Figure: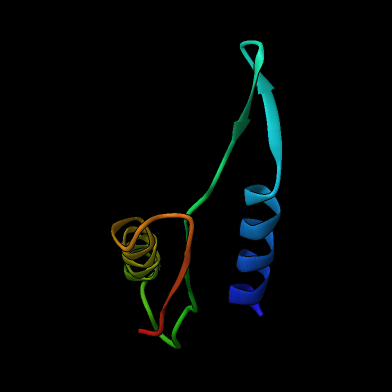
Amino acid sequence: DAVLTAERIRRHIEQTTLRFDGGLVSVTVSCGVSQLVSNEHAGHFIQRTDEALYASKQNGRNATHWHSG
């Protein structure tokens, strides 16, 4: 569900145009998603989520990636 929610938010942002400095600007977002694994340390969970985010950025940006653990 988290991946679907992140992807829905990402698409909504992608379709939004903002006024800035007298013009229109498009904005995109990259998302990283992971699920806390049983007995996993919070620091490792955050690290995996960060890795998923960087995978989105390294693969063209404006994407959602999932780290399964």
